[in-house]
Image (cartoon, rainbow, N blue to C red):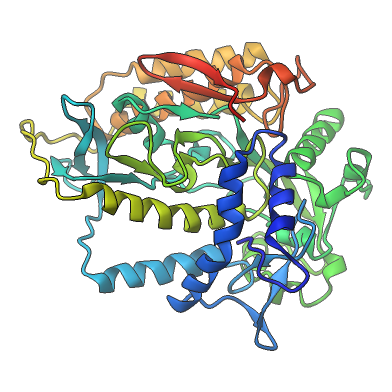
Length: 471
């Protein structure tokens, strides 16, 4: 989690690094909020019981690619996300908040005045449908990178929140920008486990099968160049050589590497790799969705009553290429703002009411056709909307997404498929529309950036698409 909290660092340096990484599309006001409020959110997490790693009583800070200073706070070595999540879940459980587990939102309810007033749900264990009325709804549903065949994300990250918001009438933007992490474990039969950028920040190297540090040919910073640069360099090396992977060499870290990166060391040893002496095979994998539901500095979307934060939202801080470890900071900073704004929006208004439809029971198992459509969607996005794109592949992926979105089967897997396909189609449409290469959106037919595309590509279900040049 990146934050300017160390000696020799400043919010101004963090601001400049973030702006530089975003390739001209960051929203400066959002970045300013991110870096200026980041320190307070780190201190708040410490107060809430998050145990960040320390040394001699001070936060132990690491450096990652494209950061000019060591400013990454971490916990349990490479277990930061789990540590933060565990502390937050514990705090929520103690707060008395009602938690509805095994429940998925399948539709946002919008009243005749165009305000979001609740959600329709389905119980994922029983298949029964229901509804919840709400004065404000906050989407915090994560990203969509599991839509790609090779992904570092959990099974649930299939873009449901983007589809829910879009179908309800909210604007979405920047969906062409999907970040592919350069270094995911690439072994047959193994999950695409993330070999963190922090490993390279500590001195690990990227080499090809001949031991050459080829990323230096693409950028003088080599392994510490921006993610878009490193991902493209690896992709082009794989295309040039036909090899299935390149390698992370952790041997320069010495025998303490497993102590510094215990989760990575443990994952690798499950497949017979000792990071202190063996090269780790890696390749790019879909990792983070930069675009999302358009949200302002307080997380408010263009649909009244609906707020969004975290990866499902487009806050504007990442532009065309996310700076490493800014995502957890964005979640902390803008969730804090969205929660406050959502509560304040309630005012003295009466709780909303709406007539729920008749309860249904959805089948929990999908047909072979649904499973085939899921598989086709994963494959088409990887081949057509992957690290480097071309128009023909994008059109094929869009056609596959359109076919999947038309699946009419009344089962829970089909409901999930339709939402995923909606988001996938929006990604492909945006990637086709943006006729340039910028950040993590790389077009083989249009390799240069263009001033013509300096802005956000915004889509709305009823009003169509536009390029917002307000940046």
